[in-house]
View 1 (cartoon, rainbow, N blue to C red):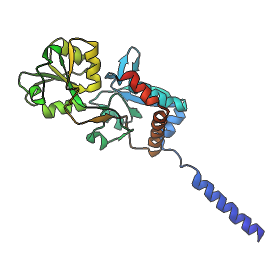
View 2 (cartoon, rainbow, N blue to C red):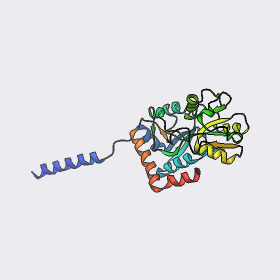
View 3 (cartoon, rainbow, N blue to C red):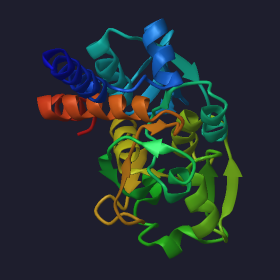
View 4 (cartoon, rainbow, N blue to C red):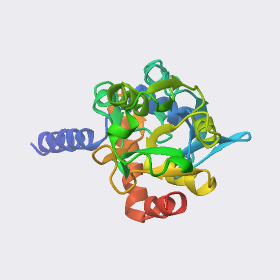
Length: 259
């Protein structure tokens, strides 16, 4: 009788332990743990979030993702992508997370996941300082004699194509070069977010950030873009983000990069 009770207790204990143990990690998380490497995709052309500088990258998102990886001792391997190729490269498993000032948009939410929102913003216009009094409304931007330069693939391009249908619109592949073209008078308007517009206007007195007080769009947020193929990986990444948030490190880094 005692033997039977002991066996029953042993079986019950084993079942409880099995229930308490976590399920085996998904393939993506397994690979990251095995290689001790987190692959991070970025266009690397959007200050102050991620910018290619020399042999590496710098910016708010770069600092955040490195802090996240440090918790587990993971190396960070940066993979260069473009705004146009971003979604396709994520789907093709070229990286584990994408960063660099990525807007949390309804279209992207249909095909990928996001870490929690940060860096609230609205769409504004970066213009030549000579035109600071010329552009007071969206209608002022949407005129046949207004030259708009856009970068392909992102939400800024989507805004231009939807709202500036009467303007002269051209495309320039290197986002970070567009402010210089506006400053030189080779274009009139660059649609971007308030953080980037403020940064370039501060750096170059020939530029002016219009609509900062009253953005052209409702408030939106940035987010790290992630695949949806591994719930364990998503859980761990959310844990890391929450950890940095509770420690106050996210606010410290935002203060460093976004004024």
